[in-house]
Image (tube, rainbow, N blue to C red; front, side):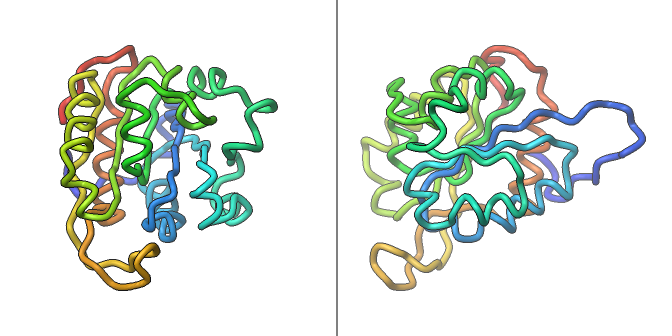
Length: 205
């Protein structure tokens, strides 16, 4: 989608930063999310807010994420103080990193069971998803159908990268489908941020 080495933001350009809403799900890759967020912020001129699912916050507490991003909201805690519609409207770009099979299914079927899934449903522009899950799950027909539906709806679903990683559920090292390296993710997000802002522009996958 883009070069793997995006240019650093130009502080003198005078262009306001893109408003980036980052959805975070409870995949095992969430354990390394702070590194991804630091690489994103170093490589892109973005104003970031984070919405975490309950499972994501159980693995990496919101207090930890607030060390690298001040505005962090969680399912089950911030629905009343921070509305999903206001987050969806604020966001010029919406990225889910990492995206679990559960969140892909909710987004594909228009379900809104929490703050993150509700914000996804209320957001009017394409969303960029970075799936991360057990390889058996990624290959299931139901997940493949959900991915196809999201792409048909104008969203971008990046193919996950098979790589050895610690599997929390199995308590062992396994080759699963996870996130590309931080520099690659930043390059893809950079290109996504350069797309015109508007409802469902059918971006390049």
